[in-house]
Image (cartoon, rainbow, N blue to C red; front, side):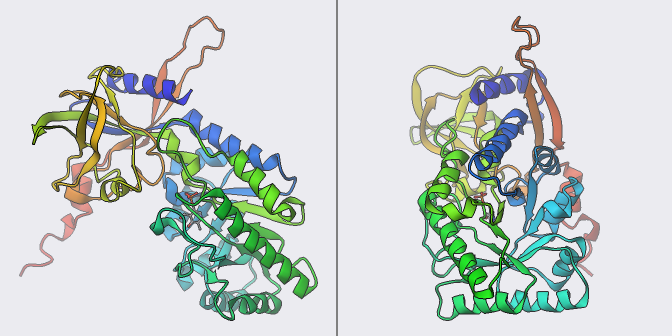
Length: 446
Ligand SMILES: Cc1ncc(COP(=O)(O)O)c(C=O)c1O
């Protein structure tokens, strides 16, 4: 169970000195949980289709080389959206055949590199297609190439994460006047365009709307193949976007639910005529990351108890700036890492940054936190602690993977022993100075 593994890991973090007064904030990744999610994704699609499926993890969700290596070992590829993400995928050993490039602002140099490597590319717009024309004409490539379309099916509950709105910046807006015809024509003129891509995510978008977006892309692929008179589009990239439950340890909705919904609403998608690519990010990692921080001080202000910790805007940027859209749970442990029980008290849990809004939780009911206590912030494995925001020059924390020894013989031997491995070292002050122009101290004087 993920929550009992987490409790053991919190305790072990204190016992083993990972979390200490000198290292008051760390991030943990539950290796078994990540593996389980990867397996759930793979088996959910295997249950509904025999077609080849590349599950390309959206690197943006957890841009960490060891995470990409783990997922690759579990059979997943990588969806990259920048030269940096591509470099991470390559460093993790993800081969070009398992990599997809999707960003909206690819430079000619990025496109050239992708085609030279044989990485799949989804053109975001028709200008990008012009660039691909020139590259394809200049040198042979093994890259599967496609176009991203925006089915314009509408928004979910979080505007900033809704990619399929009428005016979204992503893809060719399919319902705009003349757009559908232009896309069909583009395929007619380019026999090397063999893929079609859409991503109707992400958090806050209901499954039915995601499936509707996929259905629109499927219908367009059918239309294009009919018009061309052959199966020119052989692969559909249906994006990612499965939402995550941030309110409890329950992992809902599930990949199986989504795959079944797709099978019901877009049955042709799975009948074997199309290879498939998926690009899930948040749903693979979010539940398996936990931030741990020590309570440095407690105080009251206007009668409200406040626990001041070392985890705030630098790690949970979206939560701090948009708390209603991105609520996070906060769990209270004592200074030895044992779960605090007892009566709930309404309190604020603050971060270390120097602005008033740096709060992980406002008016939250939980056992009263004391100085030296440990606070755990679960569900932070995606788009959170690996996405450091450098406010106040706060250092990036160390990230540690953990495993919990199972009781193999049932006799209780090694049960519950937690082993940590370094995923990323904490940033040093020297590194902060270096990346803040330390080598150019005189640049603006004299
Ligand atoms: C093109 C594309 N694919 C996949 C994803 C991953 O979405 P999620 O992490 O919600 O699964 C995103 C997220 O922004 C995206 O833009």
